[in-house]
Image 1: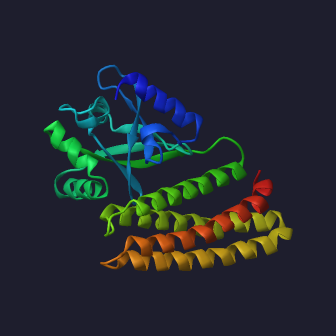
Image 2: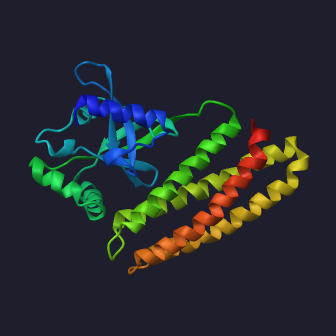
Image 3: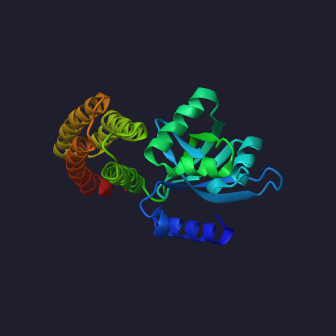
Length: 272
């Protein structure tokens, strides 16, 4: 993409917490900052990404150019990078996938969006797939309550993206969409486990009067955990219909959004 067009996307992304319009509206985007292999200067580009458990994947398509993009060469020289999601910023380590691992990841990407295959054919090269794994998170500005809202907003956005992807699905469920859903389930499970094990006890010690609120939140965690289990069981089936998946995701979304709203109303003033 031309530099001025890239900069427009970067500016809009940062001004709107990761939301952009135009041809990338509703797309999965990050901003990736690498260190120039020759210049040593930081360079930022907007990139599409794919969830993959505790890491994300980016593809060095360069819009179908016959040459690898500059950010890819930079990562080969220095695998350290900064990732911006619009909500979080974190340091990451890049690993270029090889062999069967690369081929499986790229096949998932193509199944979800045939545009990746078109880019590869146009480029005349094998498009590299790069895994980015977080090494250090920068907490959002503000108090702990603001950090909680940021975490919640991340889940809200992920659910919205998944709903869009499911609605756009064909008659069968793409493997990458399964990964997207399972990654979201894993993230919610970890988040709620940390709240139950660490945040809620700390609040209870300092604010004993919050006990009824915390009890309700723990009960809601159990409800959401059951819905997550049911969603994951559905995803393990071989013949999942996108309509059935959408219904399960919508059911989870209703419960989760009500839970997040209540938690923020009750706990953010205490945490901040």
